[in-house]
Amino acid sequence: MIELISITKVYGQEPNTVTALDRVTLKLNPNELTAVMGPSGSGKTTLLNIIGCLDSATAGEYHLDGENVAGLDLKAKARLRNEMFGFVFQAFNLLPDKTVLDNVMIPSRYSRRPRKEWKPKAMAVLEQMGIADLALRYPDQLSGGQQQRVAIARALVNDPKVILADEPTGNLDSATGREIVDVLKTLADKQGKAVVVVTHDGMVASQAHRLLQMMDGRIIDDSMLDSSSVVFSHPNF
Image (cartoon, rainbow, N blue to C red; front, side, top):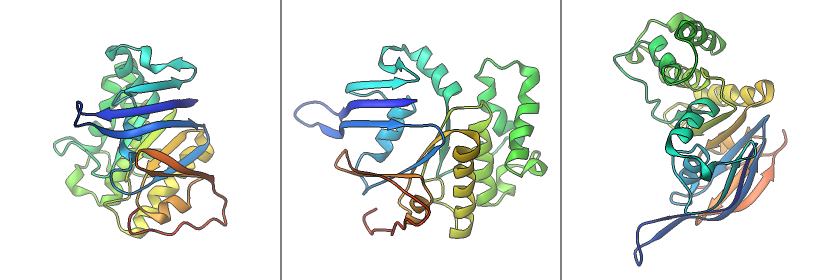
């Protein structure tokens, strides 16, 4: 589904450049929850942004479903982001003056889905997340875990093939964090999504199917995990 070939990302101008990604080669597959770990500045978020077409590589190739993303114009990339990807963030990024239902419908407003389908689809994903009864509440009336479930529902509303999550449990207690990881893993296991989670939390990583560890803009380890795998938190990760 996703293939990166020698992806490099350099910020700044000579002589003051920073290499955020250094010749990263990677394939991501459906039905797979991939955790990405590494110290701050290792390139985790930059990698996520390039995968999600939020940023462009300085060099290398990016193929999505066989199409070279680098050859797309800004409008085509925006459509791709809306239709192919769902984004989940640590800070939830819900609009405080909008109801849960309205927040979840936002991606549909930028899609090609007919308007009459926006509300039924939003209610369907809220039901899937187990929070349909919260549809008319506002974000400040919800717990952190409920807000993150709303954010995941918003990410799912356009039926994306790929879910990209940046520290999705960072603002949650450990028990609620486990619930959110279970939701993300179910999306991979039962809905066939490719799910990529950037995390510093060893508990999150231990539940993944696959673990990428990054350092200085490179993937230094790429391991498949099984149910007996244990990943310990490292003070730098």
